Length: 143
Image (cartoon, rainbow, N blue to C red; front, side, top):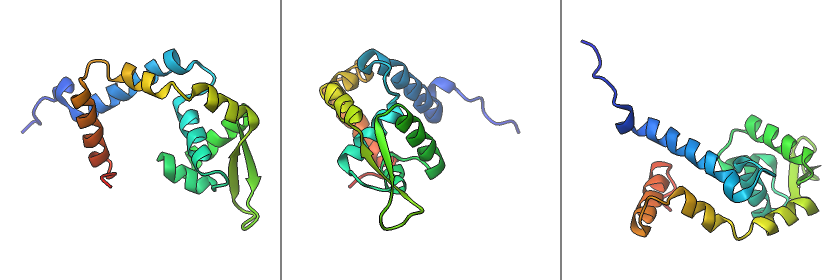
């Protein structure tokens, strides 16, 4: 028996993917093109945990180690991040913001609310809170 026809505009994984694409498209309008959303997440995570290992930062931002390593290399190449050998384990790297990285985060400090507003412009405040809570639950971040 054939599988029932999938209605894409009612299919949660498809809608999540489309929402992700919309978020990505709105990002440059708020933040400009100096960094990508992933690079900004990386910089914020390093700002919150200076000197953390690449592995710790990868876990913090939800990326596998190889993807995070590529992201770190590109962000170091932009002069926004410094990658130093760990004094405890020469096989691993510790991350810290460069002066340019700190300056970029300072310049972008007030833009998060504008980005959230742009992403959720079709939702009420209550719906925004509900969506955030549901996504946190879906991803296992209920705590």
